Length: 251
Image (cartoon, rainbow, N blue to C red; front, side, top):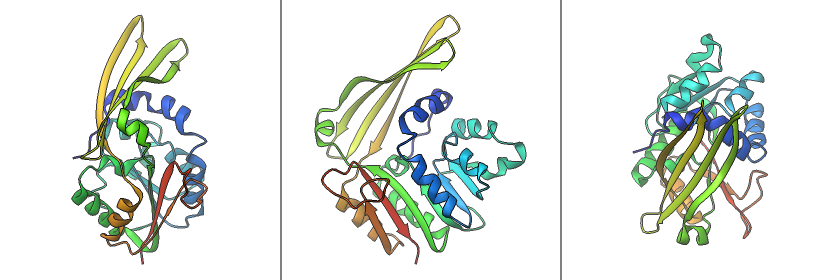
């Protein structure tokens, strides 16, 4: 089961994640897209954080997301004749009548796939949709053991405006399930709606991974060639790494 992002998340996604993620991973993924000469698929396309810029450089890009509210926001940014490029599909069983030279699943997409059988199905489905020598890139974070053990309680990760004079605040809490390698993440949104203060809470489980687990996972799939890097500059893993950047090549 993969949890669909709700309306409130889609509504405020751009203002929050452009604040959090621009300057972290966007240059890396946009450079990969720019250097691809064929079709590109963005899995977990969301509201188009990479997709819109990719369209501006004339990339032959398609996007899927399991969340219909997210794809609806993205389509509202596109000319109607480009809507065919975006669809509501799942990484586990998405389908296209053609293959891609590059498939990306940025910003923790695979962490939403909780069960190992679904993870293998997802990776094999991606592999099936790649041309020979095609590349698949996904990322997960390197687990912070202190945070895994202790969790996080009511941390404000955004406090600003979503429109002029309209305040938005997001508060995040996490509870670890170490046996099942799950982090239960709770988001509380507080925002101005006219003269009213509104609040909505949404929770989602995320599956965290360790290095050798990722290696064993990929090696159980149809991908036979892969590397794991430690950051978006493609440096090798080391004791200071905060990211797992997994690059799989279809042979």
